[in-house]
Amino acid sequence: MLDNLAFISNILFVLVLGVVTSYDDIKKNRISNRYVTIAVIFAFLTNILGSYFAQASADTKMLYIETTLLNAFFALLLGFIFWYAKVWRAGDGKLFFAYAFLLPISTYYYGYIPYFPSFTLLTNTLLTAFFLLTFNVWVATSTDEKLEILKKSADPKQLFYILLSLISVQWVSSALFAYLLPTTDVITTTVFSILLLFVLMNQFRELLYEASIPITILRIVLDYRTVTSYGFLAQFLPAFILFAVAFNFITELGIFRFTERIRINDLKAGMCCVEKVTRKAGLYGKTSEGGKLMLDLSYESLTDGDIKKLRKLNDTGKLKFEELTIWQTIPFAPILFLGALLTLIIHGDIVALLKLILL
Image 1: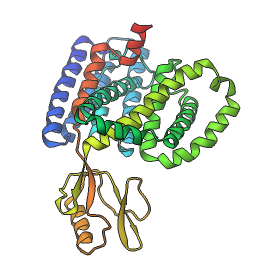
Image 2: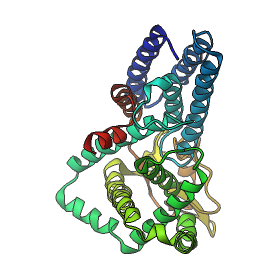
Image 3: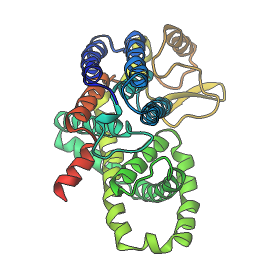
Image 4: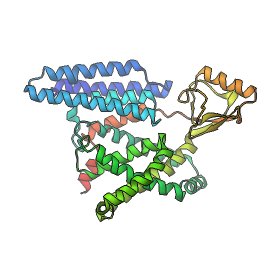
Protein backbone atom coordinates (compact mmCIF):
# COMPACT_ATOMS: atom_id res chain seq x y z
CA MET A 1 0.00 0.00 0.00
CA LEU A 2 2.87 2.41 0.77
CA ASP A 3 4.27 4.26 -2.22
CA ASN A 4 7.96 3.83 -3.01
CA LEU A 5 9.06 6.98 -1.18
CA ALA A 6 7.20 6.06 2.02
CA PHE A 7 8.44 2.47 1.83
CA ILE A 8 12.06 3.56 1.43
CA SER A 9 11.61 6.09 4.26
CA ASN A 10 10.41 3.32 6.59
CA ILE A 11 13.33 1.09 5.72
CA LEU A 12 15.83 3.92 6.27
CA PHE A 13 14.18 4.71 9.60
CA VAL A 14 14.51 1.04 10.63
CA LEU A 15 18.25 1.20 9.83
CA VAL A 16 18.72 4.40 11.85
CA LEU A 17 16.66 3.07 14.75
CA GLY A 18 18.63 -0.17 14.76
CA VAL A 19 22.02 1.54 14.85
CA VAL A 20 21.05 4.09 17.54
CA THR A 21 19.30 1.65 19.89
CA SER A 22 22.04 -0.98 19.47
CA TYR A 23 24.70 1.57 20.40
CA ASP A 24 22.65 2.72 23.41
CA ASP A 25 22.02 -0.81 24.62
CA ILE A 26 25.67 -1.84 24.32
CA LYS A 27 27.10 1.32 25.90
CA LYS A 28 24.43 2.26 28.44
CA ASN A 29 22.56 -1.03 28.91
CA ARG A 30 19.24 0.66 28.16
CA ILE A 31 16.89 1.53 25.29
CA SER A 32 15.60 5.09 25.43
CA ASN A 33 11.81 5.45 25.33
CA ARG A 34 12.40 8.57 23.22
CA TYR A 35 13.60 6.52 20.25
CA VAL A 36 10.69 4.09 20.52
CA THR A 37 8.16 6.95 20.75
CA ILE A 38 9.59 8.67 17.66
CA ALA A 39 9.53 5.35 15.76
CA VAL A 40 5.88 4.71 16.64
CA ILE A 41 4.86 8.24 15.58
CA PHE A 42 6.77 7.88 12.31
CA ALA A 43 5.15 4.47 11.68
CA PHE A 44 1.70 5.94 12.29
CA LEU A 45 2.36 8.77 9.84
CA THR A 46 3.59 6.47 7.06
CA ASN A 47 1.73 3.20 7.56
CA ILE A 48 -1.62 4.63 8.68
CA LEU A 49 -2.02 8.23 7.44
CA GLY A 50 0.13 7.56 4.37
CA SER A 51 -1.99 4.58 3.41
CA TYR A 52 -5.22 6.52 4.00
CA PHE A 53 -4.22 9.12 1.41
CA ALA A 54 -2.73 6.60 -1.04
CA GLN A 55 -4.18 6.11 -4.50
CA ALA A 56 -6.16 2.90 -4.07
CA SER A 57 -9.70 1.70 -3.52
CA ALA A 58 -11.31 2.42 -0.16
CA ASP A 59 -11.60 -1.32 0.61
CA THR A 60 -7.91 -1.93 -0.13
CA LYS A 61 -6.81 0.98 2.03
CA MET A 62 -9.01 -0.05 4.94
CA LEU A 63 -7.79 -3.66 4.75
CA TYR A 64 -4.16 -2.52 4.83
CA ILE A 65 -4.75 -0.13 7.75
CA GLU A 66 -6.72 -2.72 9.73
CA THR A 67 -4.02 -5.36 9.18
CA THR A 68 -1.29 -2.91 10.20
CA LEU A 69 -3.08 -1.89 13.40
CA LEU A 70 -3.99 -5.46 14.32
CA ASN A 71 -0.41 -6.56 13.71
CA ALA A 72 0.88 -3.71 15.91
CA PHE A 73 -1.58 -4.66 18.67
CA PHE A 74 -0.46 -8.30 18.70
CA ALA A 75 3.19 -7.19 18.69
CA LEU A 76 2.56 -4.96 21.71
CA LEU A 77 0.67 -7.74 23.49
CA LEU A 78 3.36 -10.31 22.80
CA GLY A 79 6.08 -7.88 23.86
CA PHE A 80 4.30 -7.48 27.20
CA ILE A 81 3.85 -11.26 27.62
CA PHE A 82 7.54 -11.90 26.93
CA TRP A 83 8.49 -9.18 29.42
CA TYR A 84 6.17 -10.66 32.04
CA ALA A 85 7.64 -14.12 31.41
CA LYS A 86 11.14 -12.62 31.76
CA VAL A 87 12.15 -13.64 28.22
CA TRP A 88 13.35 -10.07 27.62
CA ARG A 89 13.34 -6.65 29.31
CA ALA A 90 10.60 -4.05 29.01
CA GLY A 91 12.71 -1.94 26.63
CA ASP A 92 13.21 -4.92 24.33
CA GLY A 93 9.45 -5.50 24.18
CA LYS A 94 8.84 -1.86 23.28
CA LEU A 95 11.51 -1.97 20.59
CA PHE A 96 9.97 -5.12 19.09
CA PHE A 97 6.64 -3.29 18.94
CA ALA A 98 8.32 -0.33 17.19
CA TYR A 99 9.92 -2.57 14.55
CA ALA A 100 6.64 -4.44 14.00
CA PHE A 101 4.79 -1.15 13.46
CA LEU A 102 7.52 0.28 11.21
CA LEU A 103 7.99 -2.64 8.84
CA PRO A 104 5.35 -2.41 6.07
CA ILE A 105 3.02 -5.38 5.74
CA SER A 106 4.32 -5.87 2.19
CA THR A 107 7.71 -6.78 3.69
CA TYR A 108 6.35 -10.17 4.74
CA TYR A 109 6.10 -12.68 1.91
CA TYR A 110 7.55 -16.04 2.94
CA GLY A 111 5.62 -17.52 5.84
CA TYR A 112 3.05 -14.71 5.90
CA ILE A 113 0.64 -15.07 8.82
CA PRO A 114 -2.70 -13.24 8.58
CA TYR A 115 -3.49 -10.82 11.43
CA PHE A 116 0.04 -11.07 12.87
CA PRO A 117 2.68 -10.94 10.09
CA SER A 118 5.29 -9.75 12.61
CA PHE A 119 5.33 -13.23 14.10
CA THR A 120 7.87 -13.68 11.32
CA LEU A 121 9.99 -10.87 12.81
CA LEU A 122 9.83 -12.61 16.19
CA THR A 123 10.85 -15.97 14.72
CA ASN A 124 13.80 -14.45 12.85
CA THR A 125 14.91 -12.53 15.94
CA LEU A 126 14.74 -15.49 18.33
CA LEU A 127 16.51 -17.80 15.88
CA THR A 128 19.25 -15.19 15.49
CA ALA A 129 19.53 -14.90 19.27
CA PHE A 130 19.59 -18.67 19.67
CA PHE A 131 22.45 -19.22 17.22
CA LEU A 132 24.51 -16.23 18.42
CA LEU A 133 24.18 -17.08 22.11
CA THR A 134 24.70 -20.80 21.48
CA PHE A 135 27.94 -20.05 19.62
CA ASN A 136 29.07 -17.70 22.39
CA VAL A 137 28.30 -20.21 25.11
CA TRP A 138 29.83 -23.11 23.19
CA VAL A 139 33.12 -21.30 22.66
CA ALA A 140 33.29 -19.97 26.25
CA THR A 141 32.84 -23.33 28.03
CA SER A 142 35.23 -26.26 28.28
CA THR A 143 34.49 -29.84 27.25
CA ASP A 144 34.27 -30.96 30.89
CA GLU A 145 31.82 -28.15 31.65
CA LYS A 146 29.67 -29.11 28.66
CA LEU A 147 29.60 -32.77 29.74
CA GLU A 148 28.67 -31.83 33.31
CA ILE A 149 25.86 -29.57 32.14
CA LEU A 150 24.71 -32.23 29.65
CA LYS A 151 24.32 -34.74 32.51
CA LYS A 152 22.36 -32.18 34.53
CA SER A 153 20.05 -31.27 31.63
CA ALA A 154 19.40 -34.91 30.63
CA ASP A 155 17.35 -35.65 33.74
CA PRO A 156 14.78 -38.30 32.62
CA LYS A 157 12.01 -36.93 34.86
CA GLN A 158 12.34 -33.38 33.47
CA LEU A 159 12.52 -34.66 29.87
CA PHE A 160 9.35 -36.68 30.49
CA TYR A 161 7.51 -33.60 31.75
CA ILE A 162 8.78 -31.56 28.79
CA LEU A 163 7.42 -34.28 26.48
CA LEU A 164 3.98 -34.15 28.11
CA SER A 165 4.00 -30.34 28.19
CA LEU A 166 4.75 -30.06 24.48
CA ILE A 167 2.02 -32.59 23.59
CA SER A 168 -0.57 -30.69 25.65
CA VAL A 169 0.50 -27.16 24.67
CA GLN A 170 0.58 -28.06 20.99
CA TRP A 171 -2.95 -29.46 21.17
CA VAL A 172 -4.42 -26.58 23.19
CA SER A 173 -2.68 -23.87 21.14
CA SER A 174 -3.84 -25.38 17.84
CA ALA A 175 -7.43 -25.17 19.12
CA LEU A 176 -7.24 -21.75 20.79
CA PHE A 177 -5.32 -20.03 18.01
CA ALA A 178 -6.98 -21.63 15.01
CA TYR A 179 -8.36 -18.24 13.99
CA LEU A 180 -5.25 -16.29 14.98
CA LEU A 181 -3.02 -18.52 12.88
CA PRO A 182 -5.23 -19.72 10.03
CA THR A 183 -2.52 -21.72 8.30
CA THR A 184 -1.86 -25.37 7.59
CA ASP A 185 1.89 -24.78 7.67
CA VAL A 186 3.16 -27.35 10.16
CA ILE A 187 6.43 -25.49 10.71
CA THR A 188 4.66 -22.26 11.66
CA THR A 189 2.28 -23.92 14.11
CA THR A 190 5.14 -25.95 15.63
CA VAL A 191 7.31 -22.87 16.10
CA PHE A 192 4.37 -21.07 17.70
CA SER A 193 3.82 -23.98 20.12
CA ILE A 194 7.50 -24.04 21.07
CA LEU A 195 7.53 -20.28 21.75
CA LEU A 196 4.36 -20.56 23.85
CA LEU A 197 5.82 -23.48 25.79
CA PHE A 198 9.03 -21.53 26.39
CA VAL A 199 7.06 -18.63 27.88
CA LEU A 200 4.96 -20.92 30.06
CA MET A 201 7.96 -22.84 31.36
CA ASN A 202 9.73 -19.62 32.29
CA GLN A 203 6.83 -18.34 34.37
CA PHE A 204 4.52 -21.24 35.29
CA ARG A 205 6.66 -24.37 35.13
CA GLU A 206 5.23 -26.27 38.11
CA LEU A 207 1.64 -25.46 37.14
CA LEU A 208 2.35 -26.47 33.55
CA TYR A 209 3.82 -29.80 34.62
CA GLU A 210 0.77 -30.56 36.78
CA ALA A 211 -1.72 -29.61 34.05
CA SER A 212 0.13 -31.43 31.25
CA ILE A 213 -0.65 -34.93 32.59
CA PRO A 214 -4.49 -34.76 32.45
CA ILE A 215 -4.43 -32.73 29.21
CA THR A 216 -2.14 -35.29 27.54
CA ILE A 217 -4.38 -38.14 28.67
CA LEU A 218 -7.42 -36.27 27.35
CA ARG A 219 -5.70 -35.71 24.02
CA ILE A 220 -4.81 -39.39 23.68
CA VAL A 221 -8.45 -40.31 24.33
CA LEU A 222 -10.02 -37.69 22.03
CA ASP A 223 -7.31 -37.42 19.38
CA TYR A 224 -6.00 -40.98 19.38
CA ARG A 225 -5.67 -41.38 15.59
CA THR A 226 -3.65 -38.20 15.21
CA VAL A 227 -1.30 -38.88 18.14
CA THR A 228 -0.49 -42.39 16.89
CA SER A 229 -0.07 -41.41 13.22
CA TYR A 230 3.27 -41.36 11.44
CA GLY A 231 2.70 -37.76 10.35
CA PHE A 232 2.31 -36.61 13.95
CA LEU A 233 5.44 -38.42 15.08
CA ALA A 234 7.46 -37.05 12.16
CA GLN A 235 6.39 -33.53 13.12
CA PHE A 236 6.48 -33.88 16.89
CA LEU A 237 9.76 -35.71 17.57
CA PRO A 238 12.03 -33.09 15.91
CA ALA A 239 10.16 -30.35 17.79
CA PHE A 240 10.62 -32.21 21.09
CA ILE A 241 14.32 -32.79 20.46
CA LEU A 242 14.80 -29.15 19.45
CA PHE A 243 13.00 -27.83 22.52
CA ALA A 244 14.70 -30.28 24.89
CA VAL A 245 18.11 -29.24 23.56
CA ALA A 246 17.28 -25.52 23.47
CA PHE A 247 15.54 -25.32 26.83
CA ASN A 248 17.54 -27.83 28.84
CA PHE A 249 21.08 -27.99 27.52
CA ILE A 250 21.46 -24.52 26.01
CA THR A 251 19.61 -22.83 28.88
CA GLU A 252 21.85 -24.56 31.43
CA LEU A 253 24.91 -23.54 29.44
CA GLY A 254 23.58 -19.98 29.27
CA ILE A 255 23.00 -19.86 33.03
CA PHE A 256 26.55 -21.10 33.58
CA ARG A 257 28.01 -18.63 31.08
CA PHE A 258 25.98 -15.48 31.78
CA THR A 259 25.52 -15.56 35.54
CA GLU A 260 27.85 -14.86 38.42
CA ARG A 261 27.56 -14.94 42.19
CA ILE A 262 27.88 -11.52 43.84
CA ARG A 263 28.27 -10.90 47.57
CA ILE A 264 25.52 -8.79 49.17
CA ASN A 265 27.92 -5.93 49.97
CA ASP A 266 29.16 -5.88 46.35
CA LEU A 267 25.73 -5.54 44.72
CA LYS A 268 25.18 -2.50 42.49
CA ALA A 269 22.08 -0.73 41.23
CA GLY A 270 20.86 -2.02 37.87
CA MET A 271 21.94 -5.63 38.41
CA CYS A 272 19.44 -8.30 37.37
CA CYS A 273 18.84 -10.81 40.16
CA VAL A 274 18.06 -14.39 39.09
CA GLU A 275 17.02 -15.77 42.48
CA LYS A 276 13.99 -14.69 44.49
CA VAL A 277 14.19 -13.89 48.20
CA THR A 278 11.54 -15.53 50.37
CA ARG A 279 10.83 -15.44 54.09
CA LYS A 280 10.32 -18.36 56.45
CA ALA A 281 10.29 -18.34 60.24
CA GLY A 282 11.62 -14.79 60.38
CA LEU A 283 14.65 -15.56 58.19
CA TYR A 284 15.16 -14.87 54.49
CA GLY A 285 16.29 -17.53 52.05
CA LYS A 286 16.40 -17.68 48.25
CA THR A 287 14.89 -19.76 45.50
CA SER A 288 14.89 -19.71 41.69
CA GLU A 289 11.22 -20.75 41.57
CA GLY A 290 9.67 -17.92 43.60
CA GLY A 291 7.49 -18.47 46.65
CA LYS A 292 5.19 -16.90 49.21
CA LEU A 293 6.15 -13.94 51.39
CA MET A 294 8.62 -12.82 48.76
CA LEU A 295 10.84 -9.86 49.66
CA ASP A 296 9.69 -6.93 47.52
CA LEU A 297 12.64 -6.23 45.22
CA SER A 298 13.03 -4.96 41.67
CA TYR A 299 14.63 -8.21 40.51
CA GLU A 300 14.91 -7.11 36.88
CA SER A 301 16.98 -4.08 37.88
CA LEU A 302 17.96 -3.72 41.54
CA THR A 303 17.57 -0.21 42.92
CA ASP A 304 19.62 1.56 45.61
CA GLY A 305 16.67 0.98 47.97
CA ASP A 306 16.69 -2.77 47.21
CA ILE A 307 20.40 -2.99 47.97
CA LYS A 308 20.03 -1.05 51.23
CA LYS A 309 17.22 -3.40 52.26
CA LEU A 310 19.35 -6.49 51.54
CA ARG A 311 22.39 -5.07 53.32
CA LYS A 312 20.33 -4.17 56.38
CA LEU A 313 18.93 -7.71 56.56
CA ASN A 314 22.44 -9.06 56.08
CA ASP A 315 23.86 -6.89 58.87
CA THR A 316 21.13 -8.03 61.29
CA GLY A 317 21.75 -11.70 60.49
CA LYS A 318 18.33 -12.31 58.90
CA LEU A 319 19.70 -13.50 55.54
CA LYS A 320 20.45 -17.22 55.22
CA PHE A 321 22.85 -16.51 52.33
CA GLU A 322 25.82 -14.26 51.56
CA GLU A 323 25.60 -14.14 47.74
CA LEU A 324 23.00 -13.71 45.01
CA THR A 325 23.14 -15.00 41.44
CA ILE A 326 23.21 -12.08 39.00
CA TRP A 327 22.61 -12.12 35.25
CA GLN A 328 25.29 -10.60 33.07
CA THR A 329 23.06 -8.36 30.96
CA ILE A 330 23.01 -9.26 27.27
CA PRO A 331 22.27 -6.34 24.91
CA PHE A 332 19.21 -7.50 22.99
CA ALA A 333 18.68 -4.42 20.80
CA PRO A 334 21.40 -5.50 18.32
CA ILE A 335 19.76 -8.94 18.05
CA LEU A 336 16.35 -7.34 17.37
CA PHE A 337 18.03 -5.20 14.72
CA LEU A 338 19.57 -8.28 13.08
CA GLY A 339 16.15 -9.96 13.14
CA ALA A 340 14.61 -6.93 11.40
CA LEU A 341 17.41 -6.89 8.80
CA LEU A 342 16.97 -10.60 8.16
CA THR A 343 13.22 -10.08 7.67
CA LEU A 344 13.86 -7.26 5.20
CA ILE A 345 16.53 -9.11 3.23
CA ILE A 346 14.63 -12.37 2.73
CA HIS A 347 11.13 -10.80 2.72
CA GLY A 348 9.74 -13.04 5.42
CA ASP A 349 10.38 -16.05 7.61
CA ILE A 350 13.80 -17.71 7.29
CA VAL A 351 12.32 -21.08 8.29
CA ALA A 352 9.60 -20.87 5.61
CA LEU A 353 12.17 -19.82 2.99
CA LEU A 354 14.52 -22.69 3.86
CA LYS A 355 11.62 -25.12 3.71
CA LEU A 356 10.73 -23.82 0.23
CA ILE A 357 14.35 -24.12 -0.95
CA LEU A 358 14.89 -27.61 0.48
CA LEU A 359 11.55 -29.09 -0.52
